Length: 565
Image (cartoon, rainbow, N blue to C red):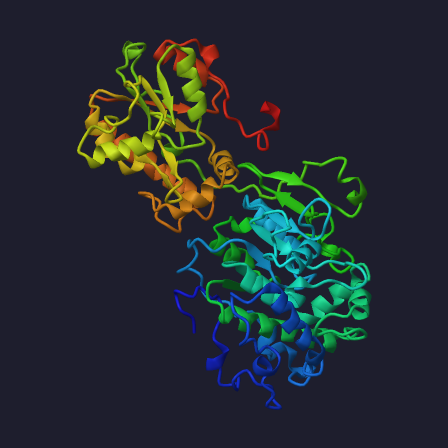
């Protein structure tokens, strides 16, 4: 069972008739005798937590293995993710950061690529230029600080264990209590895969099996981990321990998933609001998977989204020594191309909406009803170059255009009445990001009727571009995609916008709505422009009498358009 307020993506094992109060078949209560943390609370000192952890460390290995039988691997509940439908939660703002508590060779690189592809800042293995995540977590906790205080800030930490000396370091085990209690709210990942496949992967990956066996890890003492059974038992114990502590700290979210399940991309995409095509197989061992040779993705250790468009910082085993001298920024493109049918007229700008007799005579104000990332800055620059007074995003020193428009309408005034600046001839971008409520507000959808009726002689602009390129631009611009998904916009309800098709459908419905409303109010003029059309500058010049050379590309995302940088 789960409670909506708890946001726990797991079932309650206490209601499982096959689970006797989390006790093993021998009656040993794992949660009581090993994981009894009644003395630990969010107020417990970090050093005290470490002391409690060390006292338990040496008694754990004697319990692991008593409860499990290798022959029942396929039915053991601890080897299967407890995944539920996420439709009710898919657009909730999951707590940040996202921390992977899973084991190595269980899709950590794929998770890293997924979040990086979705525009989030993701750390993998290293959490700053010089140190592994495991090291800065240990240093933070030993200093009595929150677990990630000495690590670089990120949206996601997709691999926190590390091959440190003398032992392989597992913060998700050794410092689990510190992490869960030291981070007020987090989304924890717990990936699963077939145990035999995992065992083969560990065995074949840079002597990892040998490194694990020679380390002294809690639950896997030195000399253990040589067989499938020993590693399976260790994994099972870790899964139950994570489930237990997250359940007792309901401010967190636990997301369990099987990296080998074909539906995992859809599950993760729906849950995190990231295109499901961002999920794939990364860092694949082609010796075990020759069918993927040449198609799997090699992912950098660190993908950092500092501002808006992603700026990747690469760490690989080959360039590790030189990384302090040069930061490479040529990470691979992770988002696959998608193809949809755009034959509908709503995806094409019409060229016959303005008769030539009205060229250079169109009424003002000129109000752009198009969407963001569709040439608003280029429009602003064009009219400014032509000596028009133009506003873009900000309509006063105090308020964004969208904000003062909303305030005006709330007081039954014309939409631009409370915008402090003198009335402009052009309003090139009227939508804005409401930082207080973390929402994107679009007056062109929410106040469309008020705009049309408030300015009965206005000229409206409606911009168009390739849906594929627009979607890419939205995804890579200051988390705009996620903001729009959370904003419950007219025609684009909360939880929509998980993929290109949903964004395209929304755009199409908006175009139809604008065209219909303007057609019902013939005192207005509607100019439709495809910003990617090479003739767009000449067309705008003919209609508005501005030199065509004033038209160009402004506010370009150079990550998507390096040719225009």
